[in-house]
Length: 281
Image (tube, rainbow, N blue to C red; front, side, top):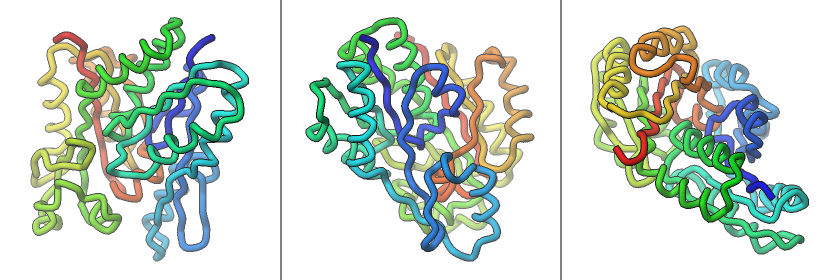
């Protein structure tokens, strides 16, 4: 039987990609006061970013419960006897723990492996996409899990932020804490290091930030996968994809919008690229 792949909505994998590759996505929850919405399910990205800009209530986020994963596991266990779950970093959310604790509650005999990706957004998404393609090629659970572990250090997420205030307000500033004193006057570039957000550099303008994202891709000689995602600036994302077409086939660049839960901490105008470095290079 084909290995079933499960991830969470902070992978930023679009519904079209998920359906095409047979990926099951477990949504996190974003709330404005007493109103709660499932990430990309009962609230779209457009609706979220409008409310982020106009609603005086600061949004909060919640991980899926173990019960949410149990429901998914029980459903998939009717179709396969091997399930691989790859979640966002356990240092950014309790989603990994929920996925792990749910394993013992599955009704049907099914082998379930849960991996903490130590990353987020398309840093996670590109790993999951590669895993799903391996599963479709009839790799078994051990082979797909091994591929995920090998891909993790090759996944490089680089993100431009207009401001760090959303990350700081949400308590996800991580190793980028040192930037807070200058957060009003700089445009930070962050990455994920050891499962947490970490400073890469800081720049003075958005244009410089877009150049930095382009140059980051140009710094890799051998690329297996590439993704561009944005919060509220699709035109900027289009222009960046056009530029990146000189380095990597445009039609192979994954496009996505930063999910509402990630957007709670990234804020509007954020942009990110993820490079999945080719193995053995």
